[in-house]
Image 1: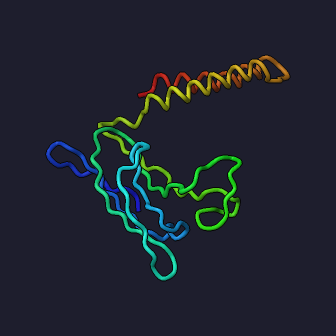
Image 2: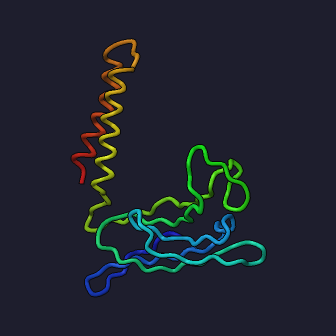
Length: 163
Protein backbone atom coordinates (compact mmCIF):
# COMPACT_ATOMS: atom_id res chain seq x y z
CA UNK A 1 0.00 0.00 0.00
CA UNK A 2 1.49 3.42 -0.88
CA UNK A 3 2.28 6.08 1.67
CA UNK A 4 -0.74 7.95 2.92
CA UNK A 5 -0.85 11.76 2.86
CA UNK A 6 0.98 13.77 5.45
CA UNK A 7 -0.81 14.52 8.70
CA UNK A 8 0.05 17.76 10.45
CA UNK A 9 0.19 17.95 14.25
CA UNK A 10 1.47 20.89 16.27
CA UNK A 11 3.67 22.19 13.46
CA UNK A 12 5.19 18.78 12.66
CA UNK A 13 4.31 16.65 9.68
CA UNK A 14 3.95 12.89 9.89
CA UNK A 15 3.63 10.27 7.20
CA UNK A 16 1.45 7.23 7.87
CA UNK A 17 2.49 4.03 6.13
CA UNK A 18 0.92 0.59 6.40
CA UNK A 19 2.12 -2.46 4.56
CA UNK A 20 1.12 -6.11 4.65
CA UNK A 21 3.14 -9.15 3.96
CA UNK A 22 2.36 -11.22 0.87
CA UNK A 23 5.74 -10.36 -0.69
CA UNK A 24 7.47 -11.23 2.56
CA UNK A 25 6.89 -14.95 2.08
CA UNK A 26 10.23 -15.22 0.26
CA UNK A 27 12.43 -14.30 3.19
CA UNK A 28 12.20 -16.13 6.48
CA UNK A 29 12.77 -14.44 9.79
CA UNK A 30 13.78 -11.11 8.26
CA UNK A 31 12.37 -7.89 9.67
CA UNK A 32 10.83 -5.65 7.00
CA UNK A 33 11.90 -2.03 7.36
CA UNK A 34 10.46 1.33 6.43
CA UNK A 35 13.26 3.42 4.92
CA UNK A 36 13.19 7.22 4.92
CA UNK A 37 15.89 8.90 2.81
CA UNK A 38 18.07 5.80 2.98
CA UNK A 39 17.80 5.19 6.73
CA UNK A 40 15.71 2.47 8.35
CA UNK A 41 13.18 4.26 10.59
CA UNK A 42 10.74 1.48 11.49
CA UNK A 43 10.77 -2.31 11.58
CA UNK A 44 8.37 -5.23 12.11
CA UNK A 45 9.09 -8.86 12.91
CA UNK A 46 7.92 -11.52 10.48
CA UNK A 47 6.04 -14.59 11.67
CA UNK A 48 5.12 -17.98 10.28
CA UNK A 49 1.52 -18.29 9.05
CA UNK A 50 0.22 -21.37 7.21
CA UNK A 51 3.64 -22.44 5.95
CA UNK A 52 4.96 -19.03 4.88
CA UNK A 53 6.24 -15.92 6.59
CA UNK A 54 4.37 -12.64 6.78
CA UNK A 55 4.56 -9.30 8.60
CA UNK A 56 2.40 -6.26 9.18
CA UNK A 57 4.00 -2.90 9.59
CA UNK A 58 2.21 0.23 10.73
CA UNK A 59 4.62 3.12 11.14
CA UNK A 60 4.40 6.84 11.76
CA UNK A 61 7.41 8.84 10.59
CA UNK A 62 8.08 12.48 11.34
CA UNK A 63 8.82 14.33 8.12
CA UNK A 64 10.88 17.52 8.37
CA UNK A 65 12.12 17.76 4.79
CA UNK A 66 11.33 16.44 1.32
CA UNK A 67 12.38 12.85 0.85
CA UNK A 68 11.61 9.33 -0.23
CA UNK A 69 10.00 6.41 1.52
CA UNK A 70 10.34 2.71 0.72
CA UNK A 71 9.83 -0.69 2.26
CA UNK A 72 12.65 -3.24 2.19
CA UNK A 73 13.69 -6.54 3.59
CA UNK A 74 17.44 -6.28 4.18
CA UNK A 75 19.93 -8.96 3.21
CA UNK A 76 21.01 -11.34 5.94
CA UNK A 77 24.28 -12.17 4.15
CA UNK A 78 26.98 -9.99 2.62
CA UNK A 79 26.55 -9.27 -1.08
CA UNK A 80 29.50 -9.44 -3.44
CA UNK A 81 29.72 -10.32 -7.10
CA UNK A 82 31.60 -13.53 -6.14
CA UNK A 83 29.39 -14.62 -3.22
CA UNK A 84 27.54 -17.89 -3.72
CA UNK A 85 24.92 -19.04 -1.21
CA UNK A 86 22.41 -21.87 -0.99
CA UNK A 87 19.38 -22.52 1.16
CA UNK A 88 17.13 -20.03 2.93
CA UNK A 89 18.07 -16.43 2.24
CA UNK A 90 19.55 -17.18 -1.20
CA UNK A 91 18.00 -16.77 -4.62
CA UNK A 92 18.32 -19.12 -7.61
CA UNK A 93 21.50 -17.28 -8.68
CA UNK A 94 23.18 -17.97 -5.36
CA UNK A 95 22.93 -14.37 -4.18
CA UNK A 96 21.55 -13.07 -0.89
CA UNK A 97 17.86 -12.18 -1.09
CA UNK A 98 17.01 -8.50 -0.90
CA UNK A 99 13.50 -7.18 -1.40
CA UNK A 100 13.04 -3.42 -1.83
CA UNK A 101 10.01 -1.55 -3.11
CA UNK A 102 10.26 1.43 -5.40
CA UNK A 103 10.40 4.70 -3.48
CA UNK A 104 7.46 7.01 -2.94
CA UNK A 105 8.58 10.64 -3.10
CA UNK A 106 7.34 13.26 -0.65
CA UNK A 107 7.47 16.96 -1.51
CA UNK A 108 7.16 19.77 1.01
CA UNK A 109 6.52 23.39 0.18
CA UNK A 110 6.90 22.61 -3.50
CA UNK A 111 10.42 21.22 -2.97
CA UNK A 112 11.47 17.67 -3.78
CA UNK A 113 14.20 15.59 -2.21
CA UNK A 114 17.75 16.62 -2.98
CA UNK A 115 20.65 14.96 -1.20
CA UNK A 116 23.85 16.93 -1.72
CA UNK A 117 26.17 13.93 -1.38
CA UNK A 118 24.15 11.92 -3.90
CA UNK A 119 24.20 14.83 -6.36
CA UNK A 120 27.98 15.23 -5.88
CA UNK A 121 28.51 11.51 -6.59
CA UNK A 122 26.35 11.68 -9.72
CA UNK A 123 28.22 14.73 -11.00
CA UNK A 124 31.58 13.03 -10.36
CA UNK A 125 30.39 9.90 -12.21
CA UNK A 126 29.21 11.99 -15.16
CA UNK A 127 32.51 13.88 -15.26
CA UNK A 128 34.37 10.54 -15.34
CA UNK A 129 32.13 9.45 -18.22
CA UNK A 130 33.02 12.61 -20.12
CA UNK A 131 36.72 11.83 -19.70
CA UNK A 132 36.19 8.24 -20.88
CA UNK A 133 34.30 9.42 -23.95
CA UNK A 134 37.10 11.88 -24.75
CA UNK A 135 39.82 9.25 -24.28
CA UNK A 136 38.19 6.11 -25.65
CA UNK A 137 35.20 7.16 -27.73
CA UNK A 138 35.28 6.19 -31.39
CA UNK A 139 33.05 8.38 -33.55
CA UNK A 140 32.69 8.80 -37.29
CA UNK A 141 32.66 12.57 -36.93
CA UNK A 142 33.44 15.19 -34.29
CA UNK A 143 29.80 16.36 -34.20
CA UNK A 144 28.78 12.83 -33.07
CA UNK A 145 31.29 13.01 -30.19
CA UNK A 146 30.01 16.46 -29.29
CA UNK A 147 26.38 15.24 -29.31
CA UNK A 148 27.24 12.52 -26.77
CA UNK A 149 29.32 14.87 -24.59
CA UNK A 150 26.51 17.45 -24.60
CA UNK A 151 24.16 14.90 -23.01
CA UNK A 152 26.56 14.50 -20.08
CA UNK A 153 27.21 18.26 -19.79
CA UNK A 154 23.45 18.99 -19.80
CA UNK A 155 22.87 16.39 -17.06
CA UNK A 156 25.63 17.97 -14.94
CA UNK A 157 24.18 21.43 -15.48
CA UNK A 158 20.70 20.28 -14.43
CA UNK A 159 22.05 18.53 -11.35
CA UNK A 160 24.00 21.62 -10.28
CA UNK A 161 21.19 24.13 -10.88
CA UNK A 162 17.98 22.29 -9.90
CA UNK A 163 16.58 22.68 -6.42
